[in-house]
Image (tube, rainbow, N blue to C red; front, side, top):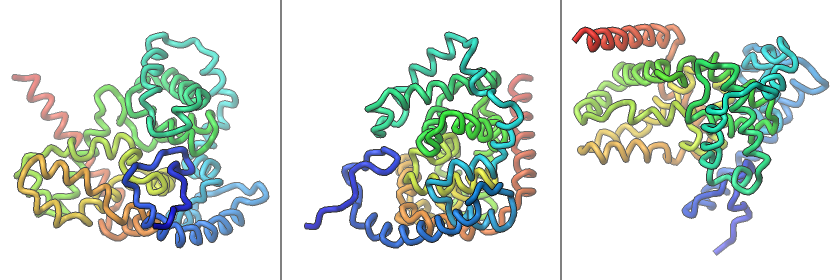
Length: 338
C-alpha cells in the first residue's frame, strides 16, 4: 500500500484524525494546489507593491474564489474594516495589555487556554501561542466589557492567531467579528445568537418545508442543531481550509454567509435527515452532515453555498431577525407576567 506524502499534522498545526482519508485528500489537493497557485498569482497582482485594497465587485469575486494563506491576514483586515479601526487609535492594543486588568477575568481566560484546540501542536507543545492567545483575549475582554470573555471566543481568537501569526492583527479581527459582524452573539444573554438560530429555522421552513416539519415533529430544538456551528463559526466542525474559505467570505460579506453554509449542509443531506425516525438518530445525523464528502473539497463547497440555498437577500434576513427578536421579547414578557 502506498504511503501518503502528507504529514499527520496540517499546515496550521492540527493533528489529522486516525481515520483521515489520505487518498481522497491527495486526490483533492492535486487539483486544489493548482487553484491555489492561480489565485496566489492574481492576488499578488492586486496587492503587490503596497497597493491599498478597496472593496469592490472584483475583490468580492476574488474573495469568494479564495484568499491564499499568505495574504489572508492583510486581506481580512482590509475588507472587514479592521485596518481602519486599528488606524484610528494607534497603540491601542498595547495600551490594553498594559492594564489595569481584572484578576477574575484573567483567571477565567487562563483556565480555558489548555482547552483550546487540544489537537493542535502549536497550542499544546509551545507556551508562546498560549501566551499570545491569553493576551488577545485579555485585551478584548477589557475593551468590551459587555462581552468580556466567554467560552467560544478562545477558538475564534486561536484560529485567527494561527492564520495571521500576529497578536495585534488577531485582536482587531476578533473585535470586528464580535462587535460588527456578529453583535450580541457572545453577550451574557446571547440574544444575537439565539435570534439567528430562530432565523435559520425560519429559512429552513421557507426553503425546505418538509425538513422543517420533520425536525419539528421529532422535537429536536434548533439550538441543539446550530449552536456549535454558529458560536465557533464552523471551526472544530468543518475541515480547517473549508472553515477558512468560509471566513474569507464572512469578513467581506458579513453574517449571511453562516446561513448560506448551514442551509447548504441541510439541503445537501435532506434525504438522510428525512429518513431519521428517532430523536437521537436525527441529532447524530446533524453531526454527520458536517462530514459530507463535499466539505473536504472546499472550492466546490464554497461554490455550492452560493447556489444551493438560492436567493438570500440581506433585507430578508433583517426582517426575519426583527420578527424573531420581537417574538423572543414577547415570550419573555409573557413569562414575567405569570
